[in-house]
Length: 439
Ligand code: GDP
Ligand code: MG
Image 1: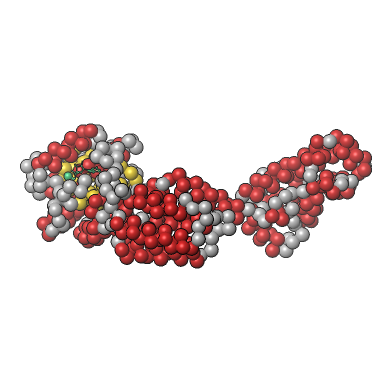
Image 2 (image 1 turned 30 degrees about the vertical axis):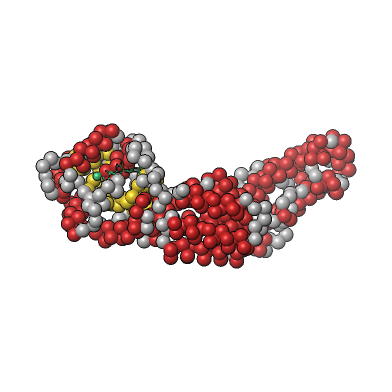
């Protein structure tokens, strides 16, 4: 059973319960510890993680609208993402890539995958066969290069890897040039020396270490050892498709401060994934649940950005108060501009004193219910007639007022969705404009 399956089982015990209490959370943490340690995640990291989960799940403030179950799930997700490091964004445009790693880790295969990745983005790719240890290694790279339509460079018979690189660099004009280096069963002095020479000759923009997922937390030690010889820009973890220790390798790499850049998910050129911690953990935990939960958390966070309840609604009365107040403050357009509404209708900005007086008269002829619900007026012609008569205005003018109010309502709804609106409103109200109120 792989790590993901075990994690999902552990979480299922929690999510399957109608109600979750503190004991359930503690049981989950125990389960997670066992699962991660058998998945070859470093014990120290696991203890740190469980301590943080316990603190956040049981002691930290939870969002009101989340159940404890959802809260715990979100905390576990966040902390796992934290454990598994950040995200990688592959460099685009012209650059040179050096690939290093021990024998059989998946260097040559990974190069074909990276070549395929860049080819499919319309960039030209050249690969240099600098694994001079085994003749078969050159052939393998040549075949894989042909498969993905990358140019292959090698110097048959040349026993010095740095010389092969220098030769190839004289000819290679591709956007992306990748060097395949030799590996050994261990990082010994001979390999270290060879890699340093290649590094000097090639001057790579990116250096990737390739490790196989099945070495688990040893990946961290390898990342440190190789980094000391050729500074690494990232680690490629291969054979993620076949190992239960992938999580161990990824977390160990993250713990050293190195970045996981790509995941190898199979032997074919297309089996490459750009590393993204959220996606990786989401998959481990079972995407559907987590995706839905994250949506909910996002929605709650957005709701909390909205204006408070007393600003939820724009009424005819408050619209009028606002017009009056704004009139005193100067050009209406400026005030609205400060609130983030720049495209306020011109005709509304240029209300004359006369018109304002008429509006006031109309509003005074409205019932309390009508002031709260303008749709009543729009629906009923007799109400419009009554207001026109009561205020000494024409029905056409009442309709005009209602249509302006309607525009304002629409804009108000737009404002409410605007995150900055609330803080701008607050600033305005604090800045001596207390008489300008919405809703
Ligand atoms: P190198 O010695 O580091 O160049 O390793 P190779 O690229 O020759 O790969 C060694 C073996 O691992 C080959 O049989 C590859 O097909 C296999 N391999 C490499 N990457 C993956 C992967 O992501 N998944 C699987 N299942 N096999 C892989
Ligand atoms: Mg190889």
